[in-house]
Amino acid sequence: MSKVVPFEGLSNTRDLGGMSANDGRRVREGLLYRSGQLFFGTEGDRAKLDTLGIGKVFDFRSAPERDEKPDPAIAGAENVHLPIIQDVRTGITRGDEGNARMMDVVMSGKADIAFVDQHMQAMYAEFVTEPFAHAQYARFVDEAVAEAEQGKAVLWHCTAGKDRAGFATVIVLEALGVPRDDIVADYLQTNECLAESIDGIMAMVAERLPNAATADALRHFFLADESYLQAAYDAIDDQFGSVDSFLGQALGIDAAKREKMQSLYLE
Image 1 (tube, rainbow, N blue to C red):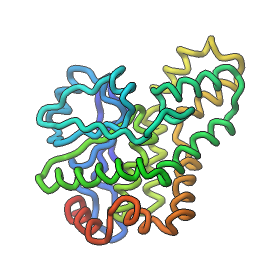
Image 2 (image 1 turned 90 degrees about the horizontal axis):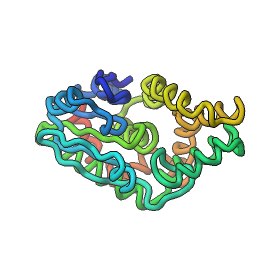
Image 3 (image 1 turned 90 degrees about the vertical axis):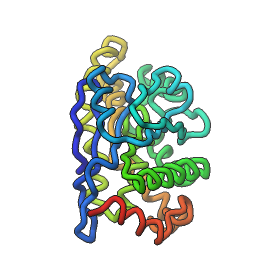
Image 4 (image 1 turned 30 degrees about the horizontal axis):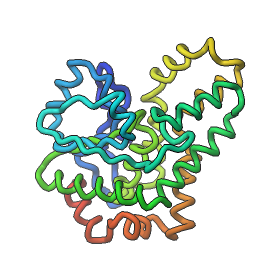
């Protein structure tokens, strides 16, 4: 799995370096970082980010999310806004208006875990089926490769670093030939990284929750669940037939580009 990079205020920042590909090579350390939002980083965290050699930060959040909790500047890094969701939809992101409505529904006691799962699975399927998401993820890969050619690292994030950033990580690891089981394990590692943060949120809203079932549904909403990722893979099989076809047809990651990515990111 990816390696947690310890910070004071950031709980889900990880280096993909060290993960193994099917051919026995490993992802180079210090080039590919996934994260949650950077807004809550301390002064020490910001200083540490300055030392990572990051050339670009890719922010997958919506414009309202960015405005509410802007990224800090990182020395030598360009901040690139690449919203993955074109419009606000109920239950899609943790910080936008659609998600606020989703949380209102859950906290009112009108939703259960199955309701949460249905919405999240639909969102992950849309990462695969929506042309807007294709274009944004394709640009992310192209610009990340360009940075690697100059020896620079990249960092990508959304709000929690779970969904939009999580699927970006899936794309990168699939292109690098990392085994599916390891990709899923890395995705689920998010739950360990966010455990303290989720506990804090649950404590803050505990008195507003009508019953235990509502608390269970809300906690589940913040978690990475394997069924969400499976929904994306199912959509890939249904629409493209294979991951290779999805990477090539939807994202422009053909065999030549995959070989280039592997030469840059694997050792």
